[in-house]
Every structure is written in C-alpha cells, then in structure tokens.
Amino acid sequence: MMGSARLDDKEMRQTYADTILELARNDDRVIALEADLSSAMTTSRLEKELPGQFVNVGIMEANMMGIAAGLSIVGRKPFIHSFGQFVTRRAFDQLFVSLGYAKLSAVIVGSDAGVTAEHNGGTHMTFEDIALVREIPNAHVYEASDSYQLQYLLKKAYKEGGLHYIRTIRKKAVKLYDENETFEKAKVLRNGKDVTIVASGIMVAESLQAAVQLSQMGIEATVIDMFSIKPLDNDTLIEAAKATGVVVTAENHNVNGGLGSAVAEALSENFPVPLYRIGVRERFGQVGQTEYLKKVYGLNAETIVKEVKNRLEVVI
Image (cartoon, rainbow, N blue to C red; front, side, top):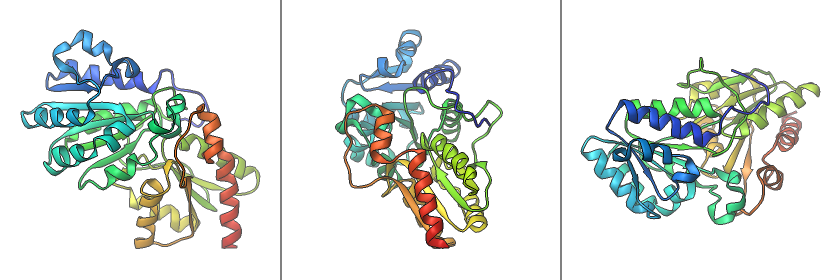
C-alpha cells in the first residue's frame, strides 16, 4: 500500500485490456463485448489476437446486454465494456431483466466515471450509475481506485460469477496499492481519532491529501477506501464510526444512491453518527478537464477539509 501521489505506470484502460487478454488466453469461455469503443479502451489488441473471443456489437448497448445474457446461458463468461452512462442509464432495462432478473453472470465495466468524462460533456458524465446498479438484487458494485485494484476486482468477479459492475476511469490514477494487496474488505489507509473519511475511486487520493492537511491542523482522520459499495463492508465502517464519532463520505457521483447513501443506510440502521456526504448535488455534468471539474463540483481535498471542520464544529 502506498501513500504518495505518484501516478500508476499505465492507464486504467490498459489494465482492463491486459487483464481481459490474460483471462481470455487462459480460458476460451471469456468473451469481451464492446460497443464500438475498442480503440477508446485499447481492447483492439484482444480483437486481433483472439478474434473468436471478441464481439463489437456497434453502438447498441441494450443489444449487448442481450448478447451477454445468451453467452452466459451457454456457459461463456462475458465482459461488457462501454462508457458508464451507456451500460447503465441507456441499457438499464436489459441489464436488469436479461442479466439481473435472469440470475446470469457477467462483468460490466463502466468507464469515464463521473467528472473524468471530461470533453465528452454532460450527456456522457454519469453521476447515477452506482445508484442504478445498486437497485438490482444480488448485483455487486465496485469502484476501482487504482490500476492494481482494478485488475484484482476483474479477476475476483471472473472467479465468483454472478452480476458485477465495476466503475473506473480510463486514464492514469494515483497509485495506492502494490501487488501484495488483496481486496476482500474495505481498506483502511490511515487511522485517526477525530473523523472517518469514507471514499471511493478518484476521491480516495483526494481524501488522503485532505487527511494530511487536517493533521497539520491537529485533526486526525481515518481514511477508508470503500471500493465495494455493494456489498458494503459494514464491519469496517461501524468500527471506524465508533472510534471517531463523525463520518464524511466522498465520491465522484451523486450523493443520492451512491457511496454516501450506502454509508448513511448502514450507519442509520446500526450505529447513527453525524454524517456529511461530499459529492454531486442536483447538477448535471459539463465539459471540462478533470481538475477543473473537481473544483466546480467540490470533489477535492479542499472541500473535504472544509466539511470535516464544519462537522467537527457541529459535534463540539
């Protein structure tokens, strides 16, 4: 586990393509499905090497869910990729009925999560994908924080079967972990006594930065990478809440239905404490570079520091 701000050696999309290629080489049941985005996700390499295990369905995401369902029925292991809004918002009924309701297995990867969609703008900026997939009974919902974690989660989903949704960015993330890490429970990256910050995806690195700034102010924060949003690691969350008494969540997603809601639900039913959710509130996406959009939507260390201080003043 690493706490520096050094970027991963390769982009998340390269990690996805490399991992699927490795799985496909070793198991001819693995089939990669793309909706005309093989260049964007670098899976064109798999298409060239193993054309019999790659299907480009064109810009027909709903149809892609049906194809994946058929493949699953005959024992194949489909991996579905498109931008997050296309595999959730656009194809939700097919995702829900053809895969979820039918109790079939597929790994769905939604890329360009939240503000990282950048120049693709508001129509491509999904702030609600986690909320949608959380509503499917027995679905697993993850948000990958760095390249190694993405690789681990892909292999974990492949081994377990069932319906899995993995949310990710396409470019380089801040490196948090090394190959010795496992991801079966939430990762406590920093321990503190005053507040618990629960984050996922790109907000984990921002939360670690915020924790350093807070420490300089005499406030010690626990930072948890809650990469699994469903199922949520209630034990780790509640233990931290009991130790600190205050919880702040941070996500590159709408505060309703995502990580913040999942944490609020768990705490309200098990150990209620003061809670504030950092994320997108009643806004659509827009064009801009990621760092600019983080400031616009308050998805950065500065906002985390401000809201932690506000929560602690309320508690005091």
